[in-house]
Structures are given as structure tokens and as C-alpha cells.
Amino acid sequence: MPDRFGPRGVCAVIIPQQNANMQPEYELMRPPGINNQAYRFDISVHDRVPEAVLKTMPQVHGCYPDMIIVGNSFEMRTISPADYVAYHQQLESLANGVPFSTAADGCLAALRTLGAKRIAVLSPMSEGYSKNVQQFYENHGFEAPCATWLGVKESKDIFKVTVEQIIAAFDTPGFQDVDTILHVGSALGIVGMLNELETRLGRPIVSSNAAAYWYALRQFGIRDTRADIGKLWTLDSVV
Image (tube, rainbow, N blue to C red; front, side, top):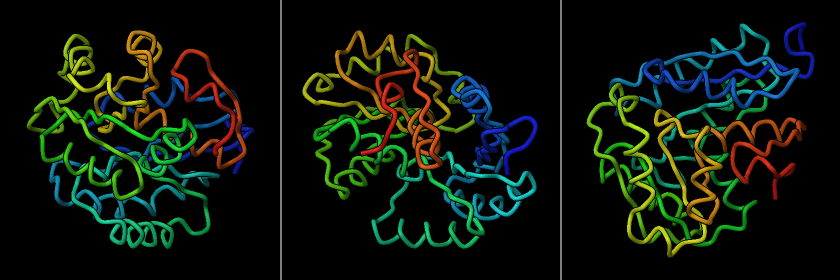
């Protein structure tokens, strides 16, 4: 519920404990009057991430949130549309009536709002993860002909990726043949780079953290816009 530190609302964000960038990024994006509260889960066992999130979900009610964001890119793992619906239902049962969204929900809403049809995918870890992302978004109606990845072996090492490596990844051949670029993998941390990258590449970038927070706020009725964190945040509503 709104409180003294968040008179417009309290946002609980569930994030991996290893992702040191996410809390600062959410603070960077936080509109005046919103209180962000972070709850962390262990991502070190990659195949058990969904279970770790479900275990953490009940804790968020300790801050009496008005909205909940599950800020992990589940679509990097093999997950069918039916599996994702079932997982959503599990999250909903633990949300106890509080509106919630996942990073994938935010990315899907962002792509549709931007009018994306043909996307390229960037993720920080393996080829397999990027291929899973391509399949996930193709299952939801987008063309995803091109993907790249940074080859990071362990989640805890993503923060070691340099700005130069990130910029080089966006120069992947094929990225000029799409209308929108999608970055998943919330630990990579590119929110502060979005304007620069979009200007250089001449097309919008949907980044998981920026999309997740933008979508959650819009769902809650917060329509604040920003001109410094990418085209998406200049839009005040969801299509």
C-alpha cells in the first residue's frame, strides 16, 4: 500500500541475489513517489530458477506492495507457451491478488507497443539461451531471425562484461535487418546505455529491466515518461 516513502505506490521487485546491477537500475528508473523494495533469490542453480522465485514470492508481502515485478528472464530457458501460462498461474496464486508481471510480460508488451514485427535477440550467456529466446518470441507471433550471445558461463560473471563488449555485440551482422532489438538477461545492465545505442543503431531496443518496470508501472496506472532511457519510456501507455 502507499506509504510515507512511496505515496504513489510500493513496488516489490524480485531479483537474483547475484545481479548487482538490478537494484541500481530500478532506482535509476523509479518515478517520484514510488517506493522500490527488492527481494532476492539464488540463481546459481540455473535449472531451479523458477522454483527459487516461487519460494521467494511470499516474502514480498512484508512490504505491502501495490505491484510485484518478477525481474528474471525466464524465456532464456526452454519454456512452451503452455508452460509459461502454468507458471503464471503459480505466481498468481502466491501474489494474493496483488498485480504482478514478469520480465517476459514486460518485453512482450513493449514489443507490441513499439509495433515490432521482426526482432534480433541479444543475451549474455550461451547460444542455447539465445535460441530459446528466439523460440519463445516466435511462439508469441514475432519473427526472430537473428541472435547473438556473449558466452558468459556463470551468472555471477555477467557483471564483468565490459561496455565495449556490449557495444560490439549490438554490431552483430543481421541486427540492421530487423525493426527492433531485444535484450534479455537482466544482469547485463544496459538501461543507462539505451539512448546512446538507439541513436547509433537507428532502431528501438527493448531491454528486460526497462521493459519490466515500464510495463508494471503502466499496469498500475503510473504514466510518467522519460527521455533519457530509450524510446519505450517516452510512451505513456501500453498498446
